[in-house]
Length: 244
Length: 244
Image (tube, rainbow over all chains, first blue to last red; front, side):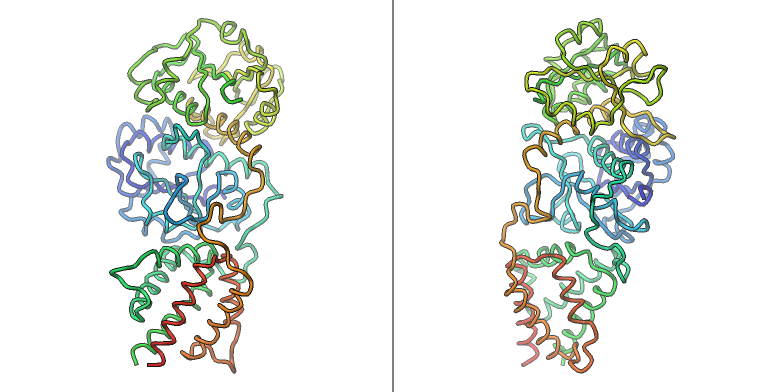
């Protein structure tokens, strides 16, 4: 289970932090690290702070977009400070572990961590099914990147160790259809945006929060592949009628 | 409560780790740091890693024995790897928080962390009421000092926070819009059915499970009123285009 959880770091500035993350991951039994455009990597500081988790660093995948990092993931969780323009499902690390722990073993989960100085952008956060927030001192709320990874992966490990049978599955278990992967969801949202523009429901010059709200709604439901196909079929039918 | 918990570091080698500990403490709302014969302190590396928790570093007390560090403490907890010569009461960080949290507010608790390379000596551990062990990957069990402090102080903070807010809604914490009522959902699904029939995506003679699947998807997300309005607006736009 823990091996199927991917830690995704977006635009990390300090290579030492990447090493600290690798060490935290390996301590807790995780190994899948994905780096989106790190400032400097590989780097001696990363190896030094990894303190023996070199294998995690060596097998880390470096990509240049969030899309690539999430393409094969079923559940995407973004780390977030509390307040955002549009509220999104928000859990603490323990609640996150209670959600992730009962998922079928083959479910691929990504947990996305933002830049040291300003976290994730709104657009990146809107790509996530859930947001997770670590409870902190309001007067001093910025956690070190490796410390944040440590806390969240610790909770995931605790859930595994304590075999939390009380936590109820929220979705996806014994489902009749496989959950949609990240790339399928991306295509779905693009299809929505295109179609809604064509039927002039979405004004590209004044998009307001239409697409983020639609994404949030559908991501909350964690759609399966058939549901995605139904929605896309509906959009295609709309486009055809519109072009007549 | 959290202010009465003292973090004690024994013979820390790397000043950077002291800074990391100070940051982790302040993030979680602790401020009482005691250093027993640190190799180098104060030090620029400590201040750099503290990243703004300078007040914790400045008020840190440096002593030269465990006895001094613990003189006024009621409960002493030592961090420990699992196996020791003499068995000792051993808890995980969550159990520790459950022990510490209900104590009277004036109870002074010390949590003692050992050297980076070999932890606490048996003698030091035997000075403790309890031992705490962070569950780790057996193949890679040595946590960074600041990471260990982070995990334990996180659990102490969680115990405090969850005291206050027990039952959280599944989502919709401070949601900006009220959730949709049953009647609004019924109207939404009727609107979907009508529109999908008009654009000939839904065949009333062969409906298959299209509507149930669409309903299940949307119900899972527990839509709010605005989301329902967006979907209905989309459907109305589609109907208008279709009737042209």
